[in-house]
Length: 65
Image (tube, rainbow, N blue to C red):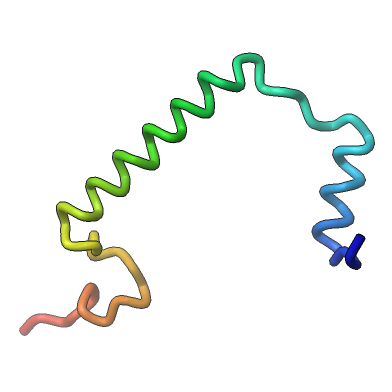
């Protein structure tokens, strides 16, 4: 196993200590989040890929006079 960084070690320790609980209806949850992702992707495509809130998009925060 490759070396783990501090955050990864903390997550592993948390799992090993039983601090994580399984999702009661995993398949339904997977489908729900897949639908969220599909809706988001469709929304992004219909908006031309930018919703104007991307801080790396220089055109999204243009000053107007």
